[in-house]
Amino acid sequence: MKKIEAIIRPFKLEDVKIALVNSGIVGMTVSEVRGFGRQKGQVERYRGSEFTVEFLQKLKVEVVVENEKVSSVIDAIAEAAKTGEIGDGKIFISPIDSVVRIRTGDTDKEAL
Image (cartoon, rainbow, N blue to C red; front, side):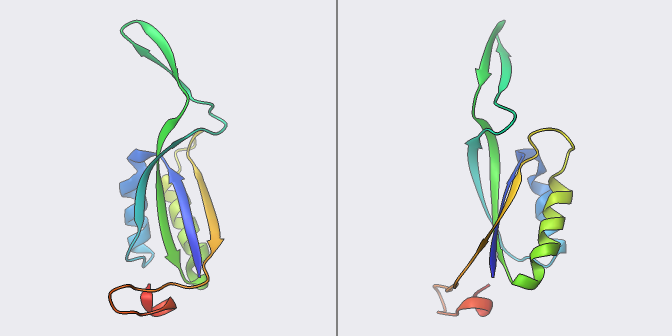
């Protein structure tokens, strides 16, 4: 099993959700996060004054999938989240040793 974490633009969440559901993913976790990468923030104007927003608002979408689905899920997220502009985000893949569903005690594949 693998955990896929995608850092995306907030307005792309619905597109990513639809892409994941179409890929057979039945659950995900979404968190509001802030950060910066190559963009190095963004210059904003407020009442005639310029200021720099160093940490940009993004969303982190997390899903855990079976190894066979990793490639298709990554492709679905990348396609749905892409705008072609700097700041589209990143996808991270990590190994998962085990999963336990708290309510039933199901483990691993059955817990997904």
